[in-house]
Each structure stands twice: as C-alpha cells, then as structure tokens.
View (cartoon, one colour):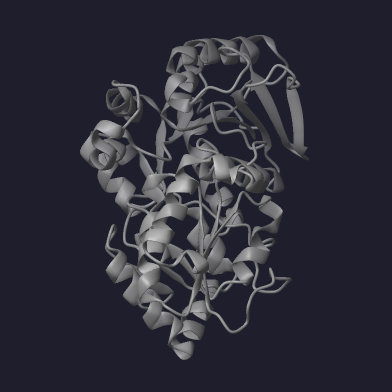
Length: 405
C-alpha cells in the first residue's frame, strides 16, 4: 500500500534535541521504517526549511522524504506555520493528481499536518488518518498564558476529529481528552508509539561512569514541561547519586542556552551542582549506551502526550521513576516496571528515587518486568501491523470496489 506521512514541522531527518525536534520526529521515522518492513511504500512529506535541501531524500528502502515548498525555506517555529498549511495542502493535491505516485491513505501527524492533509484529500479523495501527538486543550491547561499556539488551535483540532476518517490516540488518557473535545468514539482507535527493540537492548556497550555512585538519567528537550527542574530539586533527597541530563542543544552551545543556564543555576541553589551533569544533544544511535549506563530513568514531565524515552529505557532493562501523566500511565506499570508519582512534586520524586536506588532486588525485578513489557507490547513492528489494519479499513470504506495496492 502507498502511504503518505504528513509531518509538517517534524522531519525524520532532523537532528533531535531542538525546541521543535523530539518525539514526533522519531515516531515518524521509526513508524515509516516499520511500515516499509511490512512491504508498504511510504513517502514522508515535511516542510522545506532550508534552501539547500533536495526535493527528495531516500531514508531507506521503501521510505522517501519529500520536502514541500510551503512558506520561506528557512527554520520557522511550529506555532508560526499555520499560514502556510493551505499552500502545503495545495502542493500535495497537485502532486497526487499529476504525478506518478498517489497514496492510498494519508496519515497526518500533528494538527497542522491534518489541515494540510484534509485540504489535499478534498481534491483527491484520499482517506485521512490523524495522530495529534499533542492537544491544544492540554497545552493550554498546563501553560496558560505561556501557550504560544495559534488562538484557533483547539477549534481546528475539534473540527479535524470530525472530518478525518480515523483518529489514532496514543494512550487512554488521550482518548478521554479527545472524547471531551467532541471526537466521535467510533472514529477513535488506540495505537501507542513503539520502541526500536533492535537498537534499544540491555546488551551492548555503555557510557563509562563511576561504579560507586548510582546514576539517575533524564532525557529530553530542555523545555519547562519536561520537569528537569523537578528532577534536579529531587536530587537533594538522593545524596549519594548523580543525575545526568541528556538533551537540548549540542554540548558546545549549552552555555548559551537559557534553559540550560537556568537548570545549572538551580543545581547550584540546591547545592547539588557537583552531582548534576548536562550533556547536551547526543546522536540518536548513541542513546542506548546512555540508557545502559543508568540505574534508573527519571521522567518527570508536567504533561506528556505519550513519552518515548521511558519506553527506550525499559527496552534497555532500566526501570523508570516517572510522573503519572499522559502515556506514562499506560507504559509504566506502577509497582511492577517502575514507580509513578504526582507531577511537580520534587519531594515525592526524590523519595521514590532514593527508595528504588536503595533496593537492589526491587530494581532488578522492575528492570526485568520493564524489558518484558517493552518487548511484548510496544515494538514498532506491532504498531505498524495495527496501523496497517487501520489503513486497509479506511481505504475499503472510502473505495469499497477498489483493490488496495
């Protein structure tokens, strides 16, 4: 089957760690690869954000990235891309009508991608599947006046949920949010993100560390909602451990990053600066080595649509102490594969970390269960198979007399 992935701001080719480059980029790249492994022909459409980008890039067999000329060929924050989505959709429609490749299904990632996909679908009769990755209602609830989303985002997301052929939620928490938004239950299906279980394994090299000091790892973009400040504050209650934060700008630019400077100042204020280390961005292929070096992953977001880093840690046999928000409530089984605490509660987080690091037997049991859960429930192969069935279903409903090829 020919599948068009629409990912307007999150290119699978982007280096991870920037403000708008994170889990969605990984999701689109890994899902596309898994679908190609199943025999699908995948094209990922993302916005051209540099003049020297080629029109197409072959990511791997069966996956091609297409750079769409919508707006100026320069980096633009994702919250400022809405005015260019009509041009994005028109360009897609023109390509699918006149070119030699037209999709059987378009899968839109993020709400603005959905607007572009619907605009193209109305002219080409291509069914659309929507994954939001994040919802404006949740962002506004947690960020309030700091939310930089376009004012009409929530209205667009509500309309999209009623216009597309299927909405893919990534967790039960997202299902509840979507139902409250007004998305019909009959259009909803739950397919969680996955983890690359060939790359993220317990076996293999690990980053060197002090064997006499427990290591707490925390991974993600350096944005406030990821809760790194709570992890650092919690370190006061874990006096013998070190905390390593992986993510953000490249190491050479950490000193110029406002969030990194603030986190370092907080570590000084909490008198834990000698035990908190900001590493900066790390090439994705090196991440398994960092997970394997850790005794526990601390994932403390205030809110999280899904959360890939806990899964990656679990697949490496590392237990998780996290906040009970969003997708973490599904992936981390409290008391079995890790511990969950309330968000924005450094004291509860610190107590949970200290308790787990002090109990070798419990830590080993959690690690074993975490690895088994990641392998059994959250592989990209499983996600691709589930979504492949969704694609076939929407294609047959839209074009019941045609053979899907």
